[in-house]
Length: 156
Image (cartoon, rainbow, N blue to C red; front, side, top):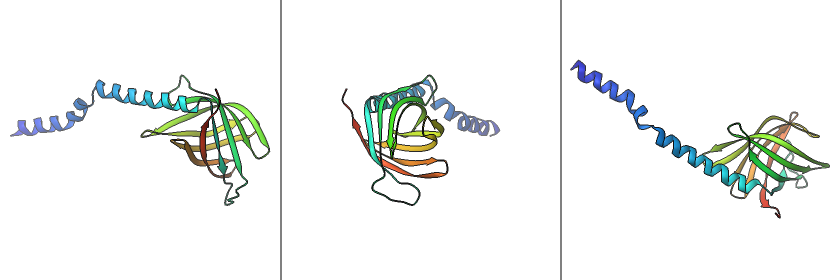
């Protein structure tokens, strides 16, 4: 009886390790690679055109535009370099940004955490991309709000 209990415990504790093998890891890696390739294709040569809120204000005149000339993975996992022209308010700046992109399932989330943007300052932002739409939150020096709009391909 003791041997049977020991076998049951061993089977219980080792089953998860036996069932998650290299084949499953390779499948997950392939799926992520496909997601990354689709995202790179979508964001290379595109514009994010939309609006943003600032604090509690919901002012329709607060528009922004981000023209992405290039978007590519770096050597670090989940890290990307985006060369982007940022236009909002009276600001118009082009800069290379290093950012993280994490996936919530198949949905990419652009993640900036204390990223310095030349000419603009330091930003935190989390932006979800779904189809050709984007939405998220931003913070800059204690002021923040929401950002949302559509993604359009630019001419090649």
